[in-house]
Image (cartoon, rainbow, N blue to C red; front, side, top):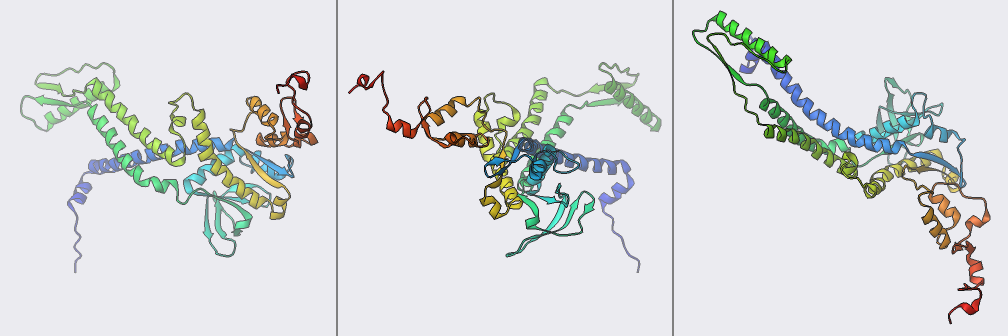
Length: 396
């Protein structure tokens, strides 16, 4: 029995006309590119902002209150994590992967290099270490498996930002593609070419040649004059106003900015920090550091402390501390430092710790002092505060 193959009308048209087939594919690619472009642009803008901020963080290795800048851990975290990347590049890439994929796996090699895994499989257990299998870095796959205790594994949230925003990207991508398409159609040259007489194959070819030459003249020159032969009538119908064109251009910027604003809000970034629309950004920067950057840094530091030090080491004072770019400048905060110490609320060593400096060995740095004379609390309690040269000058 002969098999009957049914061909749809669309397939028959596509098979007969290669130009239509190419045009259809081009439309699909163009529509997809608009959605992909706006999604990639919004995510990259926000995530790169976070990655650049965190890449400027300095990780300090503390051993019993003293900074240790000679250890291998300090060198790997702040200078050269591996043979191919600087610390800044490494942390930027790690943060980008963390937010995009909602997780990042950092493998410690036998040479103590830190390598970001591009792909892996996680096998979870209830009472034992999870196992990471098929760990790949570029085209290389490790032959061994890694336990959770052997790697640095950081998660971002319960769900990846990309999956959370997929629905929104679809809607905004469709709107943006529609605006672009409408803008292109509104500004295209529309014209008709009339011919006085019968149209045969040769006449039709002549008309097409005339149209092609006219198009080339308009496209390649700022000023184009097209000669019209006898029997031909060329007439343009484009009536695009300047105000309408300006409005369409504004619409092209509004849609991406609305999407960018939503993505920034989802990641905890104040939008004026990205578009630079506000001059005074000190309060917004504090908010950005407190609610966007610091939670990520704390997550990283907790994981580093858990994997680099044992419980015993941590209790003995060994730990890693992150100094972000918003760390206090002691010169700018000199007046506040003076008030904190002079009011006996904090000791000098406590203030040093606030600013990321190691404690002083001077035993007086652990004493509380009061007034600008920097007397100890004990000395103040043993002596009376005088209003003049002696106690008789004090009001009764």
